[in-house]
Amino acid sequence: MLKIYGRDNSINVRKVLWACAELGIAFEREDWGAGFRPTSEAGFLAMNPNAMVPVIDDDGFVLWESNSILRYLAAQHGGSALYPAAPRERARIDQWLDWQASDLNRSWSYAFMALARKSPEHGDAQQVAASIAGWTRFMRVLEQQLQHSGGYVAGADFTLADIAVGLSVNRWFGTPFEHAPLPAVAAYFERLTERPGFRTYGRNGMA
Image 1 (cartoon, rainbow, N blue to C red):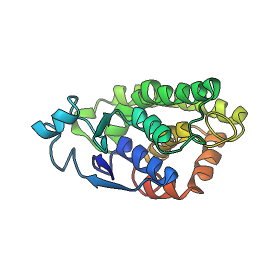
Image 2: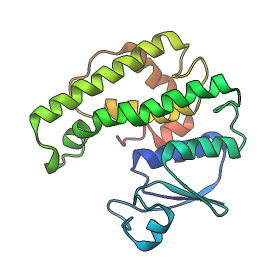
Image 3: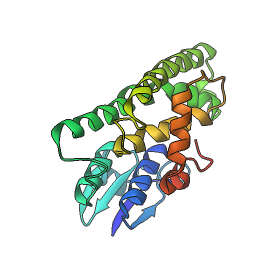
Image 4: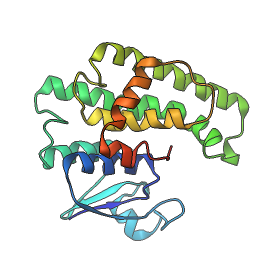
């Protein structure tokens, strides 16, 4: 059985959990990370030298990096509907997966830690404002894409990209500040809520 190492209040762990729900993959999960067993333990570092969650062990195959895990699970467990083999369709999904990890997530990090997590190390008002401005800019990119895509991030159909981006959208609405009006993003959020996996691991009260 697939083993998942990581706390279920981690946005990146929840990506993997939601993917398992979409793909019908049974799993066991162990709590690791902040508030649980430290990822600095030697046993965990042997699996992921970066000391970060999530990590999976699929019958002896160990993998880290959440979006890489999404791609692997879809490819290994019959998820062609979520991650097609056709190069151009797959590249479009990869584009948005990489955008989520490299651009969108970096933009919200400081504001989220300050406003949602109340981190005392993130109390600089100017940095909070700058983070919100950057976050809003990238969310407007998403707004524009959703206005033309046909309903989901990479096109008309739900894909792996929506798992990664959808959880970031959940974090956008779950962080307390005055949000720019983004009607296509709001409609997308409601559309995702129709999926049981998102209700369980996304829009479940956690940001």
